[in-house]
Length: 452
Image (cartoon, rainbow, N blue to C red):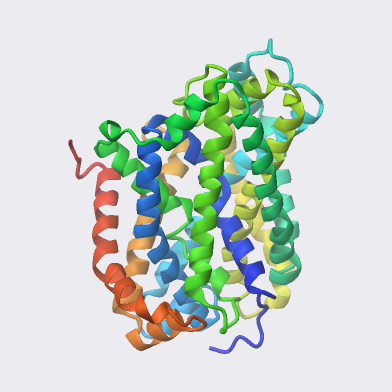
């Protein structure tokens, strides 16, 4: 289990910034607001907090324990912890999942770069333009969309190829705090708009009457995917962590930052949306279609839109680091000197795989897979199938294949109070999590339907 030949995070702060940056991404900034807007506002947010603490935190600790206990990337970690078994396929599935996820994730990253360029040139500041039409035009142009996607991937490659300390950790140390500060600026501006109070009430005041089975499942699913769990990416990140760092405190810090960014996202978006008469149930196009229109109607709107898009880019690129890192780490597990070359090969593979998703809103819009575009099919495969299956087997592996003594040793290391909670965590991982994950999985694939 020696880590002597591998890089490590230089500090607990650096690790937390990298892990939090990976977790936040599109899940907290892009997906959370539109899911909250279509799923009950405050009622959804309350359930989201509960499920993040009940499901997300225990699962995050599972991946932390797997990675730190071996000091190896995901595939090798499973091989070492369960030799002479086939459990390493969970790590392999995680690599495939991250690879596929990055292929369509980078498409959205490209859209952000396009909009950022338009914002800098003032093209988004005209209140007379149709923002829905602009969005459709932007994503349907194959050359612009593919070029922006490639640029996003290249930026990710340049950072990841520099390694853990000089690349990922250094970038996140600056990007995540900058993201947090930008969110505070936008939130303050949004909260000071006339009529913002209605948006605050919608987001923070739970209306119990709006809680139904769909709201419960939406909140459970969002809490599950907000931390990027199920692909062993966090196991790979934690394999670079020093043995003296407390896993429990680190996990609590990452979850807390994720919840805080989700809170800031709601307070930055919903007050502005309500103040200017837009619908919170806009759907996936909320940020790209509504917010440019919102910012175009407020003083200094162009400046604040640029700030928001910069924030959006920071959140997306920090998540992209972890998606590429798990692939690069698996390719260079015995040859760390090959990191730079492996980063470029993996990035090129991601781009080629992502071309159908990028073109699915344009020249290939008529090509469908089970009535879904390439982009939607890839998203469905990752979000509704691969990640739930991965998370289920991670929880089963930790609770049934790893030695309890090793789990307890990693769980309590570096913390004086963690030993009080080990028994609870172990019971939740062994019995509660598998049941909850199976129920969510059966629902999303349509085998089981929950009714009021």
